[in-house]
Image (cartoon, rainbow, N blue to C red; front, side):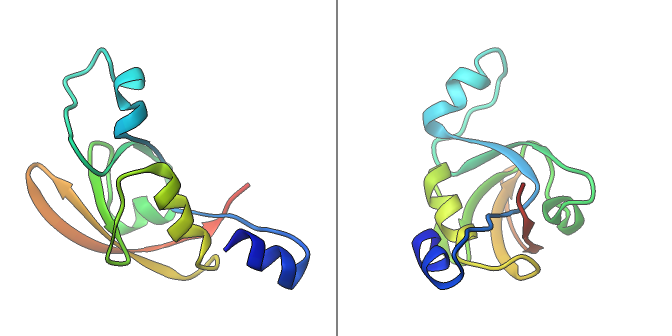
Length: 112
C-alpha cells in the first residue's frame, strides 16, 4: 500500500486508530512488570482520547485479534492493513476484552 500510494500521489500518508499497542514479540519487554498474558493478537496499552479507537469504545487492555477479517498478530500486519485504507474510512476490529470477543467499527485518521 505504501509504494502504491507513493507511485500514485508522490507521497505517503499513514493512517492510525489512535492506540499505543504491542505485539507478542515486544510485549514482554514493555509489560515485564505486569500480569498481562496473551498468546496472540495485539495488546492495546493505551488509547488516545478523541481517536478512532476511543470513539469506538476500545480500551487499554483489549487485545486486537482481527482487523477487517484478517488475523492480526504482529504490528507489521496491523500497519499493513491500516495503511491500505484512507483517513476517514472504517475498519472492522475484532478484539477480546475479559475473555469475550467483540467487534467494533473504528474510523482511522491520518497519522503524523
